[in-house]
Structures are given as C-alpha cells and as structure tokens.
Length: 272
Ligand code: KMH
Ligand code: ZN
Image (cartoon, rainbow, N blue to C red):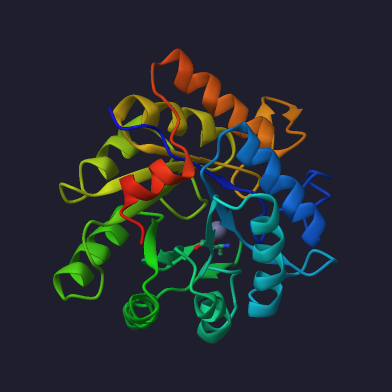
C-alpha cells in the first residue's frame, strides 16, 4: 500500500478558543500548531486563517503572512489554503489565496446545510469558476465532498474538462447536513470515485478517528485537526494538533502503514 499522507486541518473557520483554548488565531499560534502537526508526521497543512480576535478571513495578505511564517519554520511542508473560507463569504474573498500560487487548495464541490441555519453555497457555476482559476494558477485541487452527489459533480466537471485527472478527493464525513461518518458511507464514497484517484478521509467530531482508521486500512489518506475535532478521545481535549496527528501515526504503525513525508506526498498526489 502507498504510504499514508496525513493532513492537519489546524485552524478551520468555525471552531473557537472557547471550545478549545489551543485553537490558533494569531500568526504565531498558527505557526505553533503547524509545527506541532508537522513534527508529529503531517505532510500537508490545510490552512484557514483568522484575524487576531478569531474572525475568519480569506485576506491574501493574512494568508501570505501565515504561509511565509510557516515556510520559515517548515520549508518542505505542503500548505493547502482553503477556498471554502467561512459560510457567507463572497466568491472573490474565498478565491483570494489562489493568487499566492499555492501547490494545492480546496475545491468544494457542492452546496449543503452546515448546521443550524447555515448553508455552505457552492453552485455548479461557482465550482467551474473556482476550478478555472486553480487551473490558471497551476494549483492542484483537493476536491472537498460532503455528500455523494458532490463526487458526481466533480466527475461531471472532470468530463467537461474543468477538473484534471488524477483527481484527489477529501471525503468530509459527519457534517451536520452532509453524509454521515459511518464505515458503510465511507465505503460508498471510496467506491464511487474514478480509478486512479486518491482520497483522504476526514471525520467530524467523534467520527474523526473511526474514519481515519478505515482510511488507513483501505489505502486512503487521513486528515485530522481542530477544524474537524477538538478531542483526543472521549472527554479529553487535545492540547495541540500535533497530539491528534500523533494518534494517527500510532494507529498507522499498529496497522502496518508507513507515513509519507511531504516530498513523498507530492509524488503520490502529482504536485508540481
Ligand atoms: N468552513 C467551511 C464552511 C474548505 O476548507 O474548503 C468550509 C470548509 C471547506 O472548511
Ligand atoms: Zn477547511
């Protein structure tokens, strides 16, 4: 089996310090969390950024500040900015980090409920516009799917030439409004993508480690981090993203899967 690529979603846009005081907001805190995840074995940092008070932002300047600061400490890590941002942001805002020419970025492939009254909007035309901009900047999309229909959307847009193969998917399982984080549903998702694609599993809340364990066994890749889950185990708050990554590494070792370095991840994902 291929080595396991671990992505750390260190910050997100929704989770707050009130929920876990270790959630990073400032540039220094973001660097601290990126380092803890990398040192534990993460090859990719999925990056959202915040203002110092925790407000989510897609400002290219703030992304640049954070990316430069992470790069200084971790020259080889893969940094994957979000183009999902936070619910309610404009398309232009969300796309701002693409102007920085990252190696990868997320491409959200459908609209879904996002808890309470929130709707995370990604219409077909939006996805096409986002994919075009990523292609223009030679940015590999990580196709974020929150439900099975979003896999089908990505395949349709691939057939129309907007998303290049080999495609890389992130199955985000267990969002309140998306597909549930169960083994049955993860199997369904993994069996629904084209041959030659790669995939990562992310589970929200208590689904995080079950989904990651399934992915380790099935030949997928793993994403953990405060964006998805703030607990190391039931009732035990994670002290850092690194602790969550360490747990993935322990599971992978037990199950006989080696961990990919950033350069090995670049080869597996076909990054530029
Ligand atoms: N914050 C969510 C609304 C992504 O990064 O592309 C969207 C999200 C997905 O986190
Ligand atoms: Zn995200």
